Image 1 (tube, helix red, strand yellow):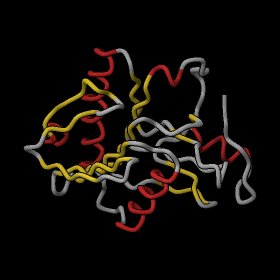
Image 2 (cartoon, rainbow, N blue to C red; image 1 turned 120 degrees about the horizontal axis):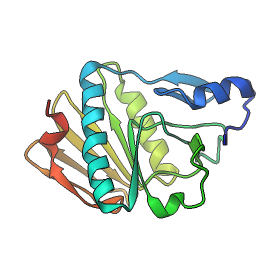
Image 3 (tube, rainbow, N blue to C red; image 1 turned 60 degrees about the vertical axis):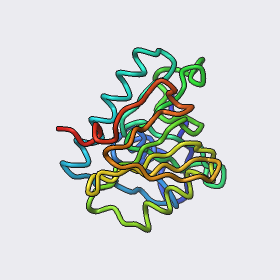
Length: 185
């Protein structure tokens, strides 16, 4: 089931095609390919594995890789973003068709893993966009310095390094590990 809505700059068919493509977003009237690297892809895989293991144990949340998109931007209904990793509490997905390609609300946790080709401007713009549209917990993972910046919907920000413990907060309350585990491998 698609929730893609048309946009004057792109056809309905194009939107439906990119809805299911990993690493492709639609925002501000344009298709954007998300930059990746071997390092950022490995970190993304580690995060999916760590979070998914805990979600499977807890059975209260679902973890998605970068192929899952979120279409929850009222000022531009056709816009969708695909965080590198996302977590949604299971009860929020109750009643949704499992064939849904874009979720029409913000995830409980959105994770962006920085790649060498990401610009500070683009990342800052995306974080502001997320916060303005109901994203309550965002991790920006920086492999080059082995750190995570946590942005919360209440406006608070924290920076954690390898030796620090990170938790899933309200998205996955039982999740906790050292930040260093994100970069293992």
